[in-house]
Image (cartoon, rainbow, N blue to C red; front, side):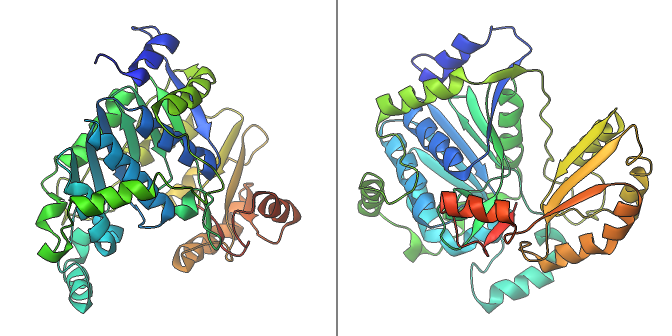
Length: 375
């Protein structure tokens, strides 16, 4: 793939036959936003984006506008979204999809797209509808990528004044981009994935003028806390510094593929769960867990017997009731909290009223505090 800045960076920082990939954690939402924006500006040939949520809000519209601008210069863009949160934003995705260089597809969609009829359809097809795509990936020119827990939206990028979803993902170069692309294609080519143009009503389809307006919005003076690099040269300069800081390491990418049978029971352990079991079983001195929803089944709790002994400590960080955005999930965790403590696990819960957390909120101005949640 000639004339790709991102591919040149991969060749610069990694030997062609090296088994190592190179990584950098994206710990803050603002950093995650800036890197994604810069990768879009630096793209020369292709961008593949896969997300559970893409909000029609300032950061979501900004990144959509920059993807359209990339498509204007010839970059082929594919956007893959889960239907559960996409239905309300059909107009945004229809606008993107109307560009000849952009294709948007929706995984496991439900009709109707809105109203009471949609809720009846959700209930009538619960087994199928319950199979959602939580996978998240962002791959540019087949050479650099981002994967992790963040969706696209203000609350994930420290830009929502009311809600801040604390999350984490990783920027990477190297051989793991191949498996990351395989994960994307497994859903993109699935029989339950449909072009967005097959789903929205005709009046939602928007024209080139609206696309141009979306691009224009993304070039105006921005009110974001984090100001993205403007233009290809500025983006490349920004990314050069990020790629220089990457840490090489051997790694394995694990993802859960779409189900072969959407009507089958959903309680079979998936590849990611099996990989976590193997990783935990190989621990010698310490296991550190950060999870928004720390819910263990009876069998999983049985596996933790002995984890809290003198040789192996288990420390877990999760949401408190006040920071959990799903009370039902918190009740699943709270049910086993005392048992986990009895087995020697150390448990820590996110509290927006804790002094350290309050200091962080004041320093970063990310949200009002009560909207803080661990994702």
